[in-house]
Length: 250
Image (cartoon, rainbow, N blue to C red; front, top):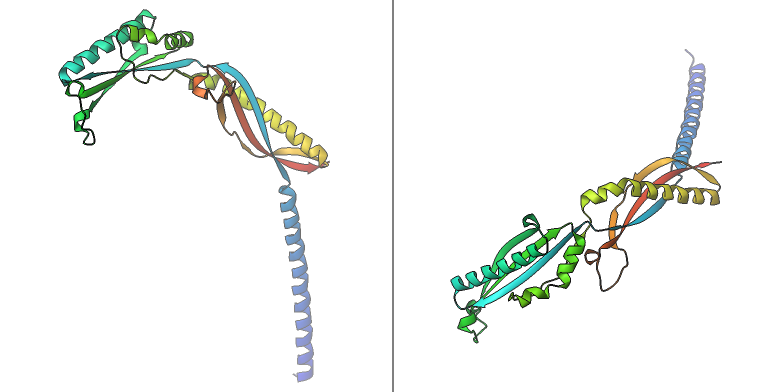
């Protein structure tokens, strides 16, 4: 075969291959661009938070009562401490608390003679014995009353030792009763916020992209530097939800 026709055929083949390659690049570029466009449209979303609150009272109260004695003899001291525990328990039962609402806790013993830095130890008060009694009751008002009148134990001969006040708690059981409704309110408010944003941006709210229930927070109803959440009977329960909504065009 003559070399001239062979060269011409080869040139035509190269041109056709180049055209096919170019066409493929155009199609691929178009599809890639469309994919990026769709991705960007799908990424149009707004993140909003919804907050809902309600007030409720604590349904459980705890009151630790801490008392101590000093003694030169450990065995005698334990006997005296037991007498104090009986006085505390008897008083609480007088106030209407049941056996299962009163818990006698562990004894703490401090030997002052074992403290090397002390050289003024009174051997008649060598041991300091301390014990707690914990009251745990759903009778909130009675726990408050006993806390206010705790000095009565001192009148009966009990040496109170840095006894803190009561703690007031919302139990998980009580919290679970209100949790679904509170989260529903928070989610509805998140949707309202998303609608308002969409209106100002000239779009509409679509489906949910992602939702996060968030947390339930328990606060003192009347926040004060003198009263923390646990010291307050009246609580404020707050639910916060975070929701991503897709945005569509009108």
